[in-house]
Image 1 (spheres, rainbow, N blue to C red):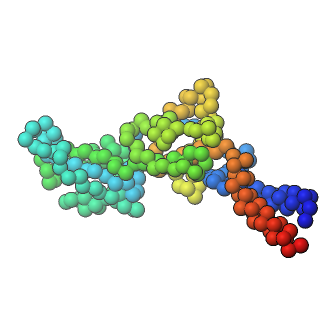
Image 2: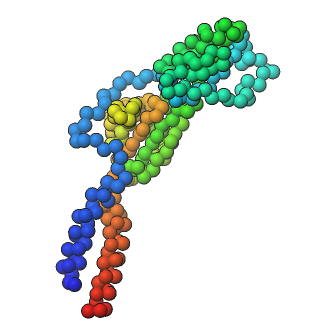
Image 3: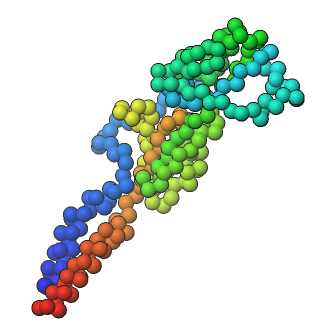
Length: 244
């Protein structure tokens, strides 16, 4: 078995494995010239959605408990109310009420109106407690689920909290997938130039998926994939040489 045979075998092995090597951790590929979603003005108010978990505090006397020092309101146990698949939320006294599709303010106003039949001057506070985004950096090799901590949580904050963009990530090719994953809106961001930073202030919404494409590491991937086969091939040559 001569040198030409070895080279031919290695070349064939490379051709057979190269496609899977270079794209092994790629997600969310789109066709060439894909029409990405146009940037829209940021929506400042969050809209309650099915499967949100709500912390709902219902107070009386127009919230007087908040300023009464002898009321340990801040230490009370948090109660979670689920917005069910049909947009309804089951609440004390009221039963199931539709809250999905409303802003936090509108939902608070609605419940304050409903609770007037049971409570003197009701005061309602609502907080969505399971708002999160998913961030993939360096392709799909690193992923994190981040909690949205404020209403102005933007793309730069999420990238920083997930560890930033490393040498093997494309800062000029960052995708955000939003909405129903069967037909999502897909936004494309290029943060490489300072002139594009105006889009970096893009406010995130719960369940957004941020995907930073990875730069292919050809040499290391080829080496890691091909080395076991070459070792096996070398062993075969050795055995062949011994018994020849």
